[in-house]
Length: 412
Ligand SMILES: Cc1cc2nc3c(=O)[nH]c(=O)nc-3n(C[C@H](O)[C@H](O)[C@H](O)COP(=O)(O)OP(=O)(O)OC[C@H]3O[C@@H](n4cnc5c(N)ncnc54)[C@H](O)[C@@H]3O)c2cc1C
Image (cartoon, rainbow, N blue to C red; front, side, top):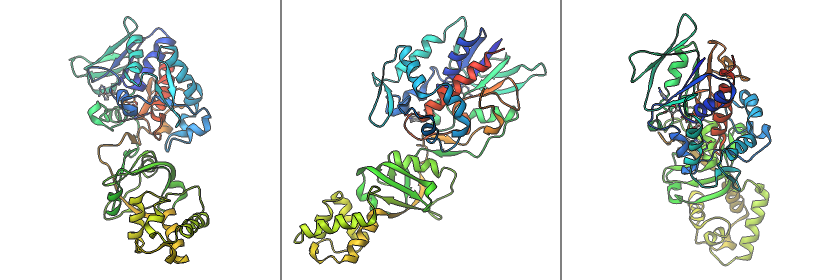
């Protein structure tokens, strides 16, 4: 039996290893880049955040805005703990950071890719790099015909795994070709959209805060509790970045918004305090520093630049004595800090980490990753309609779906 895997990224490489461990099939990984795993090397800022330190599968699955339920079988078969053991067992010591992101202890993604380069060697497996697939079709005898950039004749195989990734960071070789291959073999591809990107906003004043970061902020879009996330935030020249902005971009991936039709956004800088508690804190501070300026007292609570911005947005005289602030003004300030109103106008184009949308999940068996519409075809990784939040969840999805696809493709 001959299995071809299109895509030498995380899902394809793991599928190839799993297939080689499972049966005696010949395995060919076809990768357009001259070396495999190019995107793996970019993850985690080059350090490769390969999975999460979380262990509760339910909690892990909740980090996938799309595809969590579908992932359940794959995730239980190859959960983050097993992924960590697997890499450590293959000579890559790992570390888990305080925010549960897992990295190679070396902080070098090459160590992760190196495992696959060592394991995927002839005679059983072959990494066919520098080769692009331009089309796939099903033959009347059930084989798959794969058109390759450097060959006149198609490659004929018995089983096919599409692991071409999404279409984010296209310069890495993930250009979305797999969507066309899956469609050609009878699959539906859902609406595609960028996810995990910085956000741009209509308001100009937050540009003054560029570079300011907050460790725990709640962002809520459209005043909808389902479109809400808690985490670190960074203000940028054009808007918002950091894990909580990325998470929100994932939650609103399929929402339409632009400068003409912006999406309302609220920033809660004190998610752990109620409005009353925050008003109380402000009241105490102002009472203790009655003779100082309102802005300076506010700066005890938030960074100076934000205190100045708050005074401007609320039209409060920043130089007025703290003692002169009225009860209403204190409440107004607390309300503002608990719910800074902004308007989302767009996503940082071309900078998204993943693609939301992909091959329709109801057409794929979640226990095997085999296509329900084209037997013998398997799909794994980001080409599926699965996307996770930041923190190692996307690579984790690629490893566990890749593993399941490889094991099942290799079974006769
Ligand atoms: C900048 C950045 C940072 C990220 N950081 C993290 C992180 O820290 N943690 C995390 O979990 N996730 C992260 N991700 C997301 C994660 O990298 C992807 O979700 C994951 O790599 C998807 O794996 P995949 O195997 O499905 O696809 P890919 O890794 O995209 O691999 C697909 C492969 O298929 C090849 N290919 C495509 N079409 C063809 C064709 N026609 N012929 C031949 N080969 C083809 C491509 O060249 C590519 O190598 C990040 C993504 C980016 C862009």
